[in-house]
Image 1 (cartoon, protein in one colour):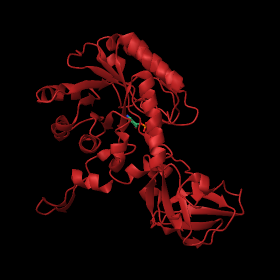
Image 2 (tube, rainbow, N blue to C red; image 1 turned 180 degrees about the horizontal axis):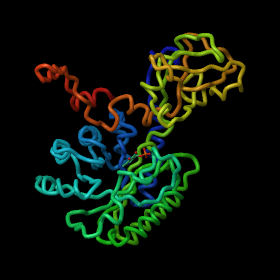
Image 3 (spheres, rainbow, N blue to C red; image 1 turned 90 degrees about the vertical axis):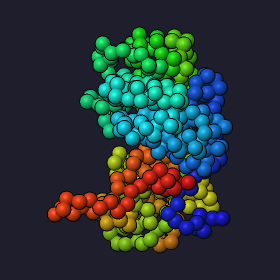
Image 4 (cartoon, rainbow, N blue to C red; image 1 turned 180 degrees about the vertical axis):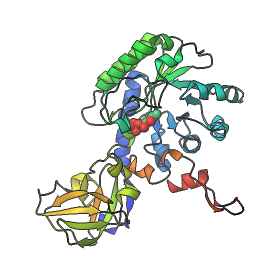
Length: 389
Ligand SMILES: Cc1ncc(COP(=O)(O)O)c(C=O)c1O
Protein backbone atom coordinates (compact mmCIF):
# COMPACT_ATOMS: atom_id res chain seq x y z
CA UNK A 1 0.00 0.00 0.00
CA UNK A 2 1.30 3.49 -0.81
CA UNK A 3 -0.43 6.75 0.19
CA UNK A 4 -1.28 7.20 -3.49
CA UNK A 5 -3.61 4.15 -3.30
CA UNK A 6 -5.71 5.48 -0.41
CA UNK A 7 -9.03 7.20 -1.13
CA UNK A 8 -9.00 10.68 0.38
CA UNK A 9 -9.80 12.46 2.57
CA UNK A 10 -8.90 10.06 5.37
CA UNK A 11 -7.93 10.34 9.03
CA UNK A 12 -5.41 7.54 9.55
CA UNK A 13 -4.53 6.54 13.12
CA UNK A 14 -1.01 5.23 13.66
CA UNK A 15 -1.67 2.26 15.94
CA UNK A 16 1.96 1.74 16.89
CA UNK A 17 2.49 5.40 17.77
CA UNK A 18 -0.70 5.30 19.85
CA UNK A 19 0.53 2.27 21.76
CA UNK A 20 3.94 3.89 22.36
CA UNK A 21 2.15 6.86 23.97
CA UNK A 22 -0.04 4.54 26.03
CA UNK A 23 3.03 2.64 27.29
CA UNK A 24 4.63 5.89 28.41
CA UNK A 25 1.49 6.82 30.32
CA UNK A 26 1.34 3.35 31.88
CA UNK A 27 4.91 3.91 33.03
CA UNK A 28 3.82 7.14 34.79
CA UNK A 29 1.04 5.16 36.49
CA UNK A 30 3.43 2.47 37.56
CA UNK A 31 6.02 4.90 38.90
CA UNK A 32 3.61 7.18 40.73
CA UNK A 33 0.58 5.06 41.62
CA UNK A 34 -1.81 7.53 39.95
CA UNK A 35 -4.77 6.56 37.80
CA UNK A 36 -5.06 7.83 34.21
CA UNK A 37 -8.28 8.32 32.27
CA UNK A 38 -8.43 9.03 28.54
CA UNK A 39 -10.25 12.31 27.81
CA UNK A 40 -12.48 11.22 24.94
CA UNK A 41 -13.10 14.86 24.02
CA UNK A 42 -9.60 14.76 22.46
CA UNK A 43 -9.51 11.26 21.03
CA UNK A 44 -12.42 8.85 20.71
CA UNK A 45 -11.66 6.25 18.04
CA UNK A 46 -13.28 3.45 20.01
CA UNK A 47 -11.91 0.69 17.84
CA UNK A 48 -8.56 1.26 19.56
CA UNK A 49 -10.05 1.24 23.09
CA UNK A 50 -9.42 -2.50 23.67
CA UNK A 51 -5.70 -1.83 23.16
CA UNK A 52 -5.69 1.34 25.30
CA UNK A 53 -7.54 -0.49 28.07
CA UNK A 54 -4.36 -2.52 28.75
CA UNK A 55 -2.58 0.68 29.74
CA UNK A 56 -5.14 3.19 31.05
CA UNK A 57 -7.84 3.00 33.73
CA UNK A 58 -10.85 4.34 31.89
CA UNK A 59 -12.26 7.46 30.27
CA UNK A 60 -13.37 10.92 31.22
CA UNK A 61 -16.45 12.22 29.43
CA UNK A 62 -17.89 15.63 28.64
CA UNK A 63 -21.42 14.40 27.99
CA UNK A 64 -23.75 11.41 28.38
CA UNK A 65 -22.82 10.18 24.90
CA UNK A 66 -19.11 10.16 25.69
CA UNK A 67 -19.80 8.51 29.06
CA UNK A 68 -21.76 5.74 27.36
CA UNK A 69 -19.01 5.31 24.76
CA UNK A 70 -16.53 4.89 27.62
CA UNK A 71 -18.75 2.45 29.50
CA UNK A 72 -19.59 0.28 26.50
CA UNK A 73 -16.43 0.43 24.42
CA UNK A 74 -13.55 1.14 26.81
CA UNK A 75 -15.11 -0.74 29.72
CA UNK A 76 -13.05 0.95 32.45
CA UNK A 77 -13.79 3.59 35.03
CA UNK A 78 -16.00 6.42 33.71
CA UNK A 79 -15.94 9.99 34.97
CA UNK A 80 -17.95 12.94 33.67
CA UNK A 81 -17.53 16.66 33.88
CA UNK A 82 -19.57 19.32 32.18
CA UNK A 83 -19.90 23.05 32.79
CA UNK A 84 -23.61 22.33 33.43
CA UNK A 85 -25.92 19.31 33.20
CA UNK A 86 -29.56 19.09 32.18
CA UNK A 87 -32.10 16.81 33.91
CA UNK A 88 -31.79 14.43 30.97
CA UNK A 89 -27.99 14.44 31.20
CA UNK A 90 -28.10 13.39 34.85
CA UNK A 91 -30.71 10.71 34.17
CA UNK A 92 -28.36 9.18 31.60
CA UNK A 93 -25.09 9.79 33.43
CA UNK A 94 -26.17 7.94 36.58
CA UNK A 95 -26.47 4.83 34.42
CA UNK A 96 -22.92 5.00 33.04
CA UNK A 97 -20.64 6.99 35.37
CA UNK A 98 -18.58 6.05 38.40
CA UNK A 99 -17.82 9.70 39.14
CA UNK A 100 -19.74 12.87 38.33
CA UNK A 101 -18.03 16.22 38.76
CA UNK A 102 -20.05 19.40 39.20
CA UNK A 103 -19.06 22.88 38.16
CA UNK A 104 -21.11 24.88 40.69
CA UNK A 105 -22.80 24.52 44.05
CA UNK A 106 -26.18 25.20 42.44
CA UNK A 107 -25.78 22.20 40.09
CA UNK A 108 -24.56 20.02 42.96
CA UNK A 109 -27.52 20.99 45.13
CA UNK A 110 -29.92 20.45 42.25
CA UNK A 111 -28.75 16.92 41.46
CA UNK A 112 -27.18 15.47 44.60
CA UNK A 113 -30.32 13.60 45.71
CA UNK A 114 -30.89 12.26 42.21
CA UNK A 115 -27.33 10.87 42.19
CA UNK A 116 -27.49 9.55 45.77
CA UNK A 117 -30.80 7.85 44.97
CA UNK A 118 -29.40 5.59 42.25
CA UNK A 119 -28.67 1.94 42.91
CA UNK A 120 -25.08 2.19 41.61
CA UNK A 121 -22.48 3.82 43.86
CA UNK A 122 -21.45 7.10 42.24
CA UNK A 123 -18.77 9.38 43.61
CA UNK A 124 -19.33 13.12 43.36
CA UNK A 125 -16.71 15.81 43.01
CA UNK A 126 -16.46 19.54 42.49
CA UNK A 127 -14.32 21.32 39.93
CA UNK A 128 -12.28 24.08 41.52
CA UNK A 129 -10.71 27.09 39.86
CA UNK A 130 -7.14 27.54 41.14
CA UNK A 131 -7.20 31.15 39.84
CA UNK A 132 -3.62 31.01 38.59
CA UNK A 133 -3.01 31.34 34.87
CA UNK A 134 -0.02 29.51 33.47
CA UNK A 135 -0.74 30.19 29.80
CA UNK A 136 -1.31 33.22 27.63
CA UNK A 137 -4.17 32.21 25.29
CA UNK A 138 -7.49 33.16 26.98
CA UNK A 139 -9.47 30.79 24.70
CA UNK A 140 -7.69 27.86 26.37
CA UNK A 141 -7.33 29.28 29.87
CA UNK A 142 -9.96 28.12 32.40
CA UNK A 143 -8.31 30.44 34.95
CA UNK A 144 -8.73 33.59 32.81
CA UNK A 145 -10.67 36.36 34.58
CA UNK A 146 -14.42 35.79 34.32
CA UNK A 147 -14.02 32.07 33.53
CA UNK A 148 -17.13 29.96 34.07
CA UNK A 149 -15.03 26.83 34.66
CA UNK A 150 -14.47 25.75 38.25
CA UNK A 151 -15.54 27.07 41.63
CA UNK A 152 -13.35 29.77 43.17
CA UNK A 153 -12.21 29.48 46.79
CA UNK A 154 -14.42 32.29 48.09
CA UNK A 155 -17.54 30.48 46.80
CA UNK A 156 -16.87 27.63 49.26
CA UNK A 157 -17.52 29.84 52.29
CA UNK A 158 -20.49 28.52 54.25
CA UNK A 159 -21.00 25.51 51.95
CA UNK A 160 -21.19 21.94 53.23
CA UNK A 161 -19.04 19.36 51.43
CA UNK A 162 -21.00 16.41 52.69
CA UNK A 163 -21.35 13.91 49.83
CA UNK A 164 -18.32 15.27 47.98
CA UNK A 165 -15.36 12.88 47.91
CA UNK A 166 -12.93 14.69 45.63
CA UNK A 167 -11.84 17.88 43.90
CA UNK A 168 -10.99 18.34 40.26
CA UNK A 169 -8.96 21.04 38.55
CA UNK A 170 -8.04 21.50 34.92
CA UNK A 171 -6.11 24.54 33.79
CA UNK A 172 -3.35 23.36 31.45
CA UNK A 173 -3.17 22.99 27.68
CA UNK A 174 -0.14 21.38 26.04
CA UNK A 175 1.96 22.29 29.10
CA UNK A 176 4.87 20.92 31.07
CA UNK A 177 5.09 19.64 34.64
CA UNK A 178 6.53 22.99 35.74
CA UNK A 179 3.14 24.62 35.06
CA UNK A 180 1.43 21.81 36.92
CA UNK A 181 3.74 22.58 39.86
CA UNK A 182 2.65 26.25 39.79
CA UNK A 183 -0.99 25.18 39.69
CA UNK A 184 -0.61 22.51 42.37
CA UNK A 185 1.09 25.02 44.71
CA UNK A 186 -1.87 27.38 44.21
CA UNK A 187 -4.31 24.53 44.91
CA UNK A 188 -2.46 23.57 48.11
CA UNK A 189 -2.42 27.20 49.20
CA UNK A 190 -6.11 27.93 48.51
CA UNK A 191 -7.81 24.55 48.85
CA UNK A 192 -5.42 22.57 51.09
CA UNK A 193 -7.82 22.60 54.05
CA UNK A 194 -10.58 21.16 51.84
CA UNK A 195 -8.33 18.46 50.40
CA UNK A 196 -7.75 17.16 53.95
CA UNK A 197 -11.25 15.73 53.96
CA UNK A 198 -11.20 14.27 50.41
CA UNK A 199 -10.27 10.84 49.10
CA UNK A 200 -9.21 11.79 45.56
CA UNK A 201 -8.00 14.70 43.49
CA UNK A 202 -8.15 14.94 39.71
CA UNK A 203 -5.42 17.07 38.13
CA UNK A 204 -7.24 17.32 34.80
CA UNK A 205 -5.66 17.19 31.36
CA UNK A 206 -3.34 19.39 29.32
CA UNK A 207 -0.23 17.50 30.51
CA UNK A 208 2.03 17.08 27.48
CA UNK A 209 3.47 13.89 28.97
CA UNK A 210 4.27 12.14 25.69
CA UNK A 211 6.00 15.17 24.18
CA UNK A 212 9.79 14.89 24.02
CA UNK A 213 11.39 16.68 26.95
CA UNK A 214 8.40 16.47 29.32
CA UNK A 215 9.65 16.26 32.91
CA UNK A 216 8.09 12.98 34.04
CA UNK A 217 10.16 12.99 37.27
CA UNK A 218 8.61 16.28 38.33
CA UNK A 219 5.11 15.01 37.47
CA UNK A 220 5.68 11.92 39.64
CA UNK A 221 7.00 14.14 42.46
CA UNK A 222 3.84 16.28 42.37
CA UNK A 223 1.63 13.20 42.38
CA UNK A 224 3.42 11.78 45.42
CA UNK A 225 3.14 15.15 47.15
CA UNK A 226 -0.65 14.92 46.83
CA UNK A 227 -0.61 11.30 47.98
CA UNK A 228 1.63 11.87 51.00
CA UNK A 229 0.33 15.25 52.09
CA UNK A 230 -3.38 14.40 51.95
CA UNK A 231 -3.59 10.61 51.42
CA UNK A 232 -5.35 11.15 48.09
CA UNK A 233 -5.78 8.92 45.06
CA UNK A 234 -4.52 11.06 42.18
CA UNK A 235 -6.15 11.07 38.76
CA UNK A 236 -4.89 12.56 35.50
CA UNK A 237 -7.16 12.82 32.47
CA UNK A 238 -5.03 13.63 29.44
CA UNK A 239 -6.49 13.51 25.96
CA UNK A 240 -3.88 14.96 23.69
CA UNK A 241 -0.99 13.08 25.34
CA UNK A 242 -2.67 9.76 24.54
CA UNK A 243 -2.87 10.34 20.79
CA UNK A 244 -0.10 12.89 20.28
CA UNK A 245 1.51 12.52 16.85
CA UNK A 246 -0.46 9.30 16.36
CA UNK A 247 -2.42 10.09 13.24
CA UNK A 248 -2.57 12.10 10.05
CA UNK A 249 -5.20 13.59 7.78
CA UNK A 250 -4.54 12.46 4.23
CA UNK A 251 -5.68 14.71 1.41
CA UNK A 252 -5.42 15.05 -2.38
CA UNK A 253 -4.70 18.14 -4.40
CA UNK A 254 -7.83 18.82 -6.48
CA UNK A 255 -6.67 21.83 -8.45
CA UNK A 256 -3.85 24.33 -8.71
CA UNK A 257 -4.94 27.75 -9.78
CA UNK A 258 -3.04 30.92 -10.56
CA UNK A 259 -2.48 33.56 -7.93
CA UNK A 260 0.32 35.14 -6.01
CA UNK A 261 1.17 32.71 -4.67
CA UNK A 262 -0.55 29.91 -6.57
CA UNK A 263 -3.43 28.24 -4.76
CA UNK A 264 -3.63 24.48 -4.27
CA UNK A 265 -7.19 23.44 -3.52
CA UNK A 266 -7.40 20.28 -1.43
CA UNK A 267 -10.21 17.89 -0.65
CA UNK A 268 -10.05 18.79 3.03
CA UNK A 269 -11.21 22.03 4.53
CA UNK A 270 -9.95 24.08 7.46
CA UNK A 271 -13.45 24.99 8.54
CA UNK A 272 -15.00 21.53 8.13
CA UNK A 273 -12.12 19.23 9.10
CA UNK A 274 -9.50 21.20 11.02
CA UNK A 275 -11.45 23.99 12.73
CA UNK A 276 -8.63 24.69 15.22
CA UNK A 277 -6.57 25.99 12.30
CA UNK A 278 -9.02 28.92 12.12
CA UNK A 279 -10.10 29.07 15.77
CA UNK A 280 -6.78 29.02 17.57
CA UNK A 281 -5.40 29.84 14.97
CA UNK A 282 -2.51 27.45 14.34
CA UNK A 283 -0.40 26.22 11.47
CA UNK A 284 -0.42 22.45 11.06
CA UNK A 285 2.60 20.59 9.72
CA UNK A 286 2.02 19.42 6.16
CA UNK A 287 3.93 16.69 4.36
CA UNK A 288 4.17 15.59 0.78
CA UNK A 289 3.57 11.85 0.86
CA UNK A 290 6.44 9.46 0.36
CA UNK A 291 6.25 5.73 0.82
CA UNK A 292 4.22 5.67 4.03
CA UNK A 293 2.05 7.82 6.30
CA UNK A 294 4.98 8.51 8.62
CA UNK A 295 6.63 11.94 8.67
CA UNK A 296 10.09 10.37 8.39
CA UNK A 297 9.16 8.98 4.95
CA UNK A 298 7.69 12.26 3.71
CA UNK A 299 8.89 15.72 2.74
CA UNK A 300 7.71 18.49 5.02
CA UNK A 301 6.23 21.68 3.55
CA UNK A 302 8.21 24.68 4.75
CA UNK A 303 7.58 28.36 5.35
CA UNK A 304 6.53 30.48 2.36
CA UNK A 305 9.48 31.44 0.22
CA UNK A 306 11.83 28.78 1.60
CA UNK A 307 11.25 26.38 -1.32
CA UNK A 308 11.05 26.89 -5.08
CA UNK A 309 7.21 26.60 -5.14
CA UNK A 310 5.01 28.36 -2.60
CA UNK A 311 1.27 27.67 -2.41
CA UNK A 312 -1.66 28.85 -0.44
CA UNK A 313 -3.37 25.60 0.64
CA UNK A 314 -7.14 26.08 0.59
CA UNK A 315 -10.23 23.96 1.22
CA UNK A 316 -13.03 23.28 -1.27
CA UNK A 317 -15.78 24.92 0.82
CA UNK A 318 -17.51 28.20 -0.07
CA UNK A 319 -15.77 30.08 2.77
CA UNK A 320 -13.32 32.61 1.36
CA UNK A 321 -11.25 32.18 4.51
CA UNK A 322 -11.06 28.39 4.15
CA UNK A 323 -7.29 28.64 4.00
CA UNK A 324 -4.89 26.37 5.84
CA UNK A 325 -1.78 28.45 5.22
CA UNK A 326 1.16 29.21 2.97
CA UNK A 327 3.62 26.37 2.42
CA UNK A 328 6.68 25.96 0.22
CA UNK A 329 7.82 22.81 -1.58
CA UNK A 330 10.85 22.01 -3.72
CA UNK A 331 8.71 20.34 -6.40
CA UNK A 332 5.50 21.77 -7.89
CA UNK A 333 2.11 20.46 -6.70
CA UNK A 334 -0.17 18.87 -9.28
CA UNK A 335 -3.79 17.65 -9.14
CA UNK A 336 -3.84 14.13 -7.72
CA UNK A 337 -0.77 14.61 -5.51
CA UNK A 338 -1.19 13.37 -1.95
CA UNK A 339 -0.33 15.41 1.12
CA UNK A 340 -0.93 14.74 4.77
CA UNK A 341 -1.29 16.95 7.81
CA UNK A 342 0.51 15.73 10.93
CA UNK A 343 -0.76 15.25 14.50
CA UNK A 344 -4.39 15.00 13.45
CA UNK A 345 -5.52 12.15 15.73
CA UNK A 346 -6.33 14.66 18.47
CA UNK A 347 -9.10 17.26 18.51
CA UNK A 348 -9.31 17.75 14.69
CA UNK A 349 -10.80 14.30 14.29
CA UNK A 350 -13.33 14.59 17.13
CA UNK A 351 -14.28 18.11 16.14
CA UNK A 352 -15.36 16.85 12.74
CA UNK A 353 -17.65 14.30 14.38
CA UNK A 354 -19.75 15.49 17.34
CA UNK A 355 -17.34 17.38 19.57
CA UNK A 356 -17.54 16.49 23.28
CA UNK A 357 -20.34 14.11 22.31
CA UNK A 358 -22.74 17.00 22.79
CA UNK A 359 -26.31 16.41 21.77
CA UNK A 360 -26.75 17.49 18.17
CA UNK A 361 -29.61 19.96 17.58
CA UNK A 362 -32.72 18.43 16.04
CA UNK A 363 -33.84 19.74 12.64
CA UNK A 364 -37.43 20.94 12.36
CA UNK A 365 -39.83 22.94 10.24
CA UNK A 366 -41.54 25.83 12.00
CA UNK A 367 -44.94 27.00 10.76
CA UNK A 368 -45.36 30.53 12.11
CA UNK A 369 -49.06 30.92 11.26
CA UNK A 370 -50.08 27.92 13.31
CA UNK A 371 -47.09 28.18 15.70
CA UNK A 372 -46.45 24.48 15.06
CA UNK A 373 -43.14 22.67 14.99
CA UNK A 374 -42.64 19.64 12.80
CA UNK A 375 -39.49 17.77 13.89
CA UNK A 376 -37.89 16.22 10.83
CA UNK A 377 -34.84 14.60 12.37
CA UNK A 378 -33.46 13.99 15.82
CA UNK A 379 -30.00 12.68 16.61
CA UNK A 380 -29.10 10.06 19.19
CA UNK A 381 -26.17 8.21 20.74
CA UNK A 382 -25.85 5.90 17.73
CA UNK A 383 -25.40 8.92 15.45
CA UNK A 384 -22.51 10.06 17.65
CA UNK A 385 -20.95 6.59 17.90
CA UNK A 386 -21.36 5.84 14.22
CA UNK A 387 -19.59 9.02 13.14
CA UNK A 388 -16.56 7.62 14.94
CA UNK A 389 -15.15 4.14 14.50
C1 LIG B 1 -11.87 18.98 32.02
C2 LIG B 1 -10.90 18.54 30.99
N1 LIG B 1 -10.20 17.41 31.21
C3 LIG B 1 -9.30 16.94 30.30
C4 LIG B 1 -9.07 17.63 29.12
C5 LIG B 1 -8.07 17.06 28.14
O1 LIG B 1 -7.05 17.95 27.90
P1 LIG B 1 -5.84 17.57 26.91
O2 LIG B 1 -6.42 16.94 25.72
O3 LIG B 1 -5.19 18.87 26.60
O4 LIG B 1 -4.95 16.64 27.67
C6 LIG B 1 -9.76 18.83 28.87
C7 LIG B 1 -9.52 19.59 27.63
O5 LIG B 1 -10.08 20.59 27.34
C8 LIG B 1 -10.71 19.28 29.82
O6 LIG B 1 -11.41 20.41 29.61
